[in-house]
Length: 314
Image (cartoon, rainbow, N blue to C red; front, top):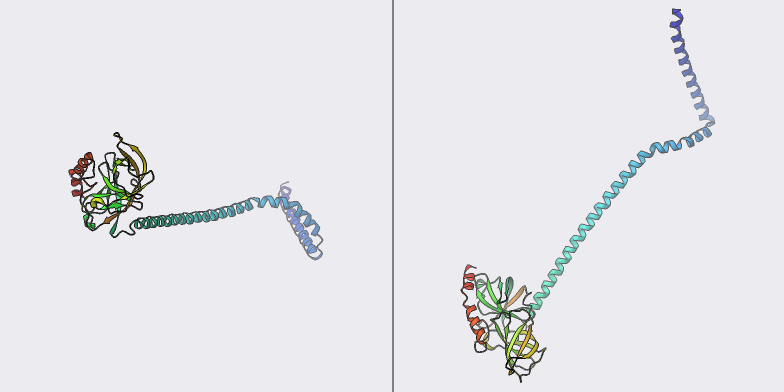
């Protein structure tokens, strides 16, 4: 009883080994036969066709991962190329803007210097660093002063015409009075007829006032006004304004003209100082041509202690 129960495992193990050897021998025989006669080719093809979907499904994750990696690499390359192109475009735009700005600056300077052709005088470029367009006084501050040779009374122009006159001078800064200042006046003449009048500031940068014009005077809307040279404050022949309107005054004996300045009084950033043979220190219209109230205001502004103190500080 005991001996038969112990022999059962040995018999089972021997049968398993025998079956393994049998399968192995059969596999070898089939392999050799297939190698020599290719008798199992159709079987292999059929098995391959049957197993192809399984192979495809098994390799799908790997292919997806590979495709995703390639797509990511391509995307990074395209993004880098796009960023590089955008950067080059920005650089090109900046260079173009700078080139255009330089060209515009050169054009402004040519126009500015062109306004002095034919005038036998020296000029100096000045930059506007501050603007005071209070209704009762129109002044600008320039970045040149005594150290640059600036002195009171020098005429100031832009590319289009007269802007004003130097009022006070500090070591490195100077203050100029615009022709639109209510206390300022410019002796002018009508180009068409030679009629001489005085153009006074109104406190508005786009309007000058020409009072006391005789009713019989030959002056029209659209007439060009230039400096007459009277009083020696401005060289003769500089453009000043264009007549915009004419109307009689309260007495009906004289006319009052309104004129538009040719210079950009509220927009000029670079101006020219004109050196004549001898600049006149006084600022404003010649006293014998000025209106009474203008004479008083002009005297007060030239002797303004606040301006003197400001220039001393500078």
